[in-house]
Length: 126
Image (cartoon, rainbow, N blue to C red; front, side):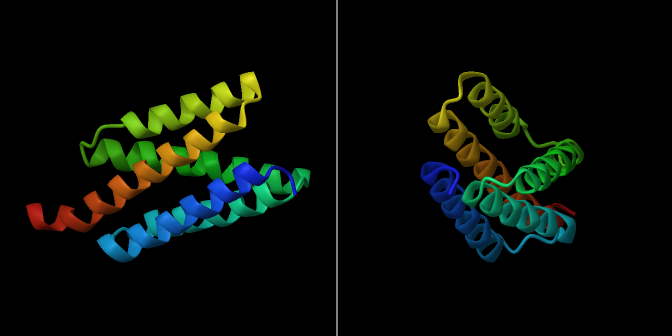
């Protein structure tokens, strides 16, 4: 196993993603698919030390960040959690600090919870 802290963090945040999708029932199918795929690649990456797992996870992170920016912009929603998650991830790589990396997991999970909530209520504003 690569790192127990990051694996547990990834599992807990993946469960939060599932909980938010059940709680808020987001209407945006792309959001759900990207979040679920990202959760799976994150758990695989943090449970192994395979380079292909890391590449798959980073690819989903890039796709997810692009989609998150698009979604947040089109729904006039603040990007604070997304910016914090990206900054914390970069800082964790510069400092090799797993606690900062785990904090980036928390920020992105909060960001996705917010996005799922916005997706669920956006049709009510019409």
